[in-house]
Image 1 (cartoon, rainbow, N blue to C red):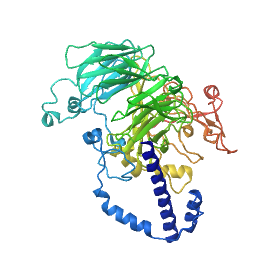
Image 2 (spheres, helix red, strand yellow):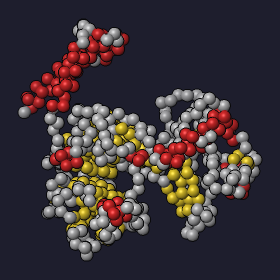
Image 3 (tube, helix red, strand yellow):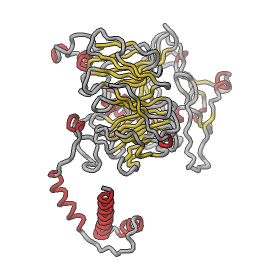
Image 4 (cartoon, rainbow, N blue to C red):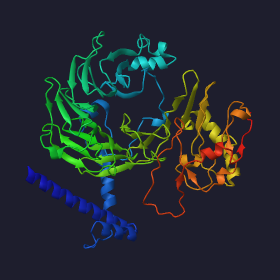
Length: 553
């Protein structure tokens, strides 16, 4: 078998050399001598003289005529959900999937505390949510959609019967960190910071407690169920991946300590065919495990420049691994070669994220999604070329004190709300900004909605807008426009002349007033680059500079 693999690898190398030779000869033929010479130097083809030739064009034309006749191999999951990302076959396929920026909130479930875990059943009919309050809710998707649809009674008369929440489960003592539906049975599996993995039979309406519990020594951070439903991979705050036999509750681990991670685990996932399993850790590494022996077969070292790897996920066909890290970068890795094919950048432009967040594909794997911690927006990229798409604002609501109203802010609504878009492009706002900046044209970055309910005492902290934008230069203009009359005493305040100050100030969190951490690019050697400093808040409040404020109608 090894001899056959060597022959196949040798054949691939010869074919790849021929491919480069054809590209070089085609570049010569098309008159791009400089590019041809550069490529020849890069791939070590200088030793053999390459004649100009149009052969590559002819081979390409012939191949495109017959490409549709090729039968693309699909695994079981792809047959069920449709083919996903596959860079071997299509680079620019047509998709009917909407951009993530067009997604709308269909339903909001009501836990008593933050909800940080969720999972869909394989058929998509159910979704489970887990909360910091240790509760689990199972919801019927059709009922959720019917609840949010004003015409639901006419369109889905059967779906509107009953509340969307069909089960509420209480058996954990701490935050729910992960959830998995069994692929064949009506069983929900949950992991928690209370170190337990629990299994609930939700086919029974009276079931509130788990019928089976697996207890670990460490807090459970992630888990993934085998497609057969017989095994469970579990990640904990320890460095060792656990593999459980669900029926016998027997635990298996790799017997070779040198193959384990060296830091707490953050994520674990089976591939669709369960041939391999992938894990991520705070040690900065990603490891691939054999699905049968449990041995580590591949390690991606320091995937995110040595920073914590927050999540890993297999593509539907199992050829690629999607990873995210605390460096706010998402990467697509080719499993067969161990290479990073694509880096999705641009999230976390304000600074390094503080909290772990997961990267995901959309349901067709045409887009990659990852939350931007600073702006509470969902970043999206084209999965094949990493082209940035419009942001989806997730919004946030800041409650000051009980009974004192709330403070809500939201971003980037113009990309999905027609009235916002119309105002951006058809109002005098752009003309005013151009006039203030003495510019012949302006580029629109984003809009930011701030809403304070009556009685809200929380103030917007002093801040400098420039620091929140990934934009250099001094011709940056923000327009503050109230939609209701605002008396002078509650209107926005400006420090006179502060736009001419030579310093850039740390951006501040509106919820806490604390500074965001700024991620410095050490590779940039710019002597004129401004350094970030703290805002002189005490001097401002003490009246060192005059404050400007106007009544607005």
